[in-house]
Amino acid sequence: MSAYPGIVRAPIPDAGATLAAAMLPRVDELAQVLVDRIRDNIEVYRSDDVVPPDDLYTSCRTNLEFMIRHVAHEPWLDLDAPRQTGRRRAEQGVPLAMVQTAFRHSFACMWEMIVTEAARTDTGHRR
Image 1 (tube, rainbow, N blue to C red):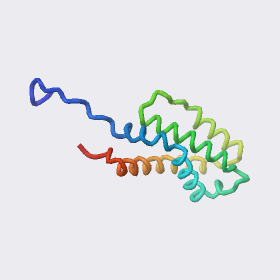
Image 2: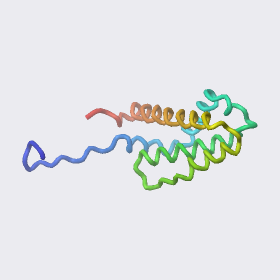
Image 3: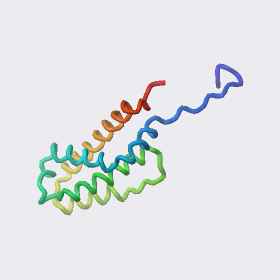
Image 4: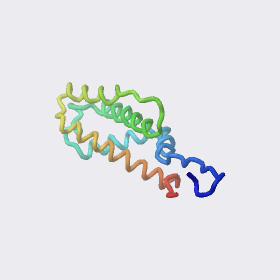
C-alpha cells in the first residue's frame, strides 16, 4: 500500500531485461568474444581437431542468444541449444568437466557483457 493514498506507483522496468534486449542485435559480435574467451582459457577448445572453430562459434552464438532471450523475458526458450551442445561435445570426446567449465565461462562472460552494456547505456542505474 502506498504511503500516499491515491498515488499509484508505476512498475519499475526490469533493467536486466532492457539490457539483454539491447544486446540481442550484437549477438554475433558477443559470440565471438565468448569464443575467444573459451579458447584462451580451456585447452581442449584450442585444438581445431577436437572442436572445430565454426562449431564452437555456432554453439556459443546459439547458447548466448538463448541466455540473452531468457534474461530479456522473451517467450522463446528452446532448451534444444544447450542440449545439442552437450551431446555434440560428448560425441567429440570433450571431457564433461571441460564442457561445464565452458558453460561457467559463458555465464561469467554474459554477466560481464550485461555490466558493460549497463555502463555503456546507463540503463542499469540505481533507483
